[in-house]
Image 1 (cartoon, rainbow, N blue to C red):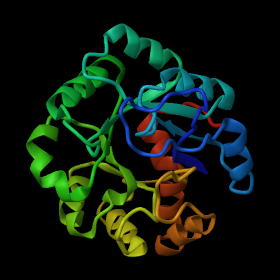
Image 2 (tube, one colour):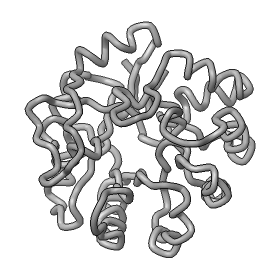
Image 3 (cartoon, helix red, strand yellow):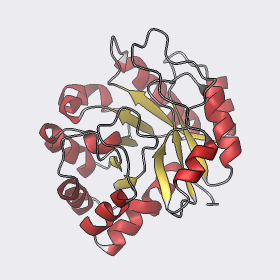
Image 4 (tube, rainbow, N blue to C red):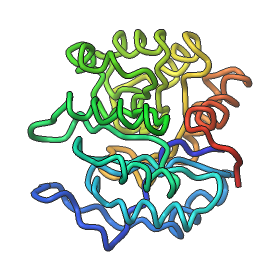
Amino acid sequence: MFDAHLHIIDPKSPPWPGDDEDPPRPFTVADYRSRVAALGVVGGAVVAGSSHPRARAGLVNALRELGGGFVGVAMLEPDTPDSELRDLHSAGVRALRLDLRRRGAVDVDGLVQLALRAADLLGWPAELRVDSRELGGLSTHLAPLRRISVDHLGLAEEGLPALFDLVASGARVKATGFGRGDLDVPAVVRTIAGINPSALMFGTDLPSTGAARPFVDSDVSLLTAALTEHEAECALSRNAVDFYGVDSLG
């Protein structure tokens, strides 16, 4: 399995200044390896968490410790220079996460311009941390982005029509965080796979910080039971390996 969405929380990484959420508990590479030992994970995407978006050193260190088959997804400010993007790419980062749910003002257009720059410079796709109910209002802003994914199945039943429209236009969707939204997960993944079998990318979302119901191993079975064998194989590995351009798995 390629775990398309996991977080490593370095105890030395400071949270976002002024964030009023309780700081999440540390979740180290050793913790992650122990937790997924029975799942046959051979690679994955280490995603910068919303509570520690600027913890770039922690992300780079996690990639170094995890080794081959793992890539990073960074959260960056719009004014991040090209030189830093190149440095992160050299360290194994392969995508940019746009946090469109953070409290307070979000410079959507600035983040989109950064994503376009990262795509032109390094071929990075953009991942959206977004409530699918907001996709309609964001459509004009997001239209220039050519390769995107949406986290956690979009979270909201009400926003599914907009999410499905994105899938029909080529967007990927993270089949992650099953305990975060109000969704009929089997029905949603079946619909997405029916629109485009290359769209779904399964991930554990470990350590599931802030989720009403954290990841459990049976979430893998929940996904596979809802899909055909070929669709499940694609969702559990092939789609994400292609999305991130992973050369080899561990």
